[in-house]
Image (cartoon, rainbow over all chains, first blue to last red; front, side):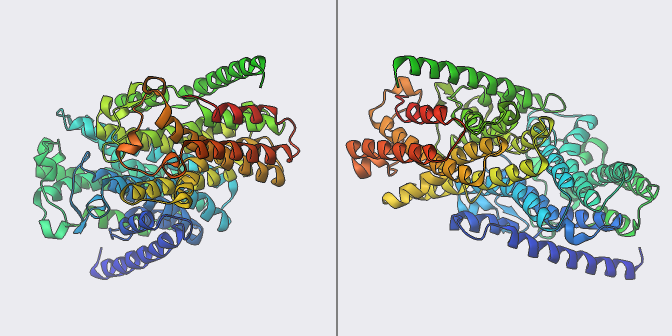
Length: 302
Length: 302
């Protein structure tokens, strides 16, 4: 990408994140909700982050020629799911993190019990947002039903939650490269794939396009995770807003440990290329943004 | 009820619970799921209990002349939601219970982290079961969409999770009767109402019938909770399979504390009568079972 491309992409990312954030907060229940619970849910929803998943939803919708306004509720729902998973992941019984993105984690502010409930609340409300919001935006009923099935599968026991369970077990035993791929395919990859597929489905993608977008998602998701592991070794603590080497402290297996830094970087590049290739052969309306997004995500330094 | 009625009702409850349990286990993902996570989810799903909520779903469906086979996926989804809420409620950061229904709680068997994930997995998979299963049983798409919205609202931040948040706060401060009603209306009542409404909607209830069934649900739900508080004071530890007086130990407000045992019992009866009255005026196809269920639930001794 040229410098101009990068600047233009940054503007797109900022504007799109802003669109998502506006919908996110509006999508929370406005009344008849416990005020502390409401605050705890909003705290983590508003704690920043790249909004990578909802941006992917909107970008995939646009890539197949869809109307991104229709994809906003799905984008918000997916960010709620992502946010709940971070709240629960940070709990003392899980990763026991005090900070995320430079801010206190949910349970450090609201206590463990309320953090568990805030996570449960966001997870449950994600499905409400998906169905209620998509209905208001005139997404076809059969597409909404398909979206609920996909989100619950990619985020549930066969998807993200399953990946987290594998990750838990990996704390107690060394895993090989196949095992690590399996963990990250589910823990990180599944929700990224779901984000892209949701946008594409709302935008009216055909089955071949959906399949290509899934391949793209798995490749980028895995590349993103390997990059995360690399940054965890090489990154600057302040830039990441969390403690580096936290996985190593828990003696978890990581890509740099298994492959070394150089080989890890090569794998990131190979996966990115593979994902982009699948996308370029899919006959999308305009794949440019998704391709840029892939490069941007895996070349990030924080 | 005559002794014959009671015996006949017991048989109905056992048979209906069995139907639900068969669907529950079949509804768990059968492949591509982490084996320990799968075991942890199945452990709590199979840990017994009265199956009150799914039985209400099927009974409400029948009461409006519907086909209960069509309501089985919704019944299973609601029991998954109920089960996840118990797993998270029992966690050390919440009620810190070691036993439930005479069995070790989920986190005592699988550890806290896996118990959190088992709860998250069941909650997420409930929506999959609801949509996928109901679709297979030919429930109309617009009804399934309505069911997802209702389940996510009654179980989420404006419903059950909100009630749990109020309950948490009540541990730190005394609440009055209105406050206690508010907690239980959401913490217990909302999912009971949802169970009944789901069955009735699938069975084709009209709006007036649905409204009457909601009133019935709120009355019975609150009566059930007050009865629970009464049993917590008067009940036998072995019969309940959990420690009695556990709420008092945490100095939570309860109905017997605020009203005394006798007035609490009168309130249970008054609420039961009010709920039954609403139902009898609703012009259902056959309300007999629901009326029996109400009596049975609030007159239980465990």
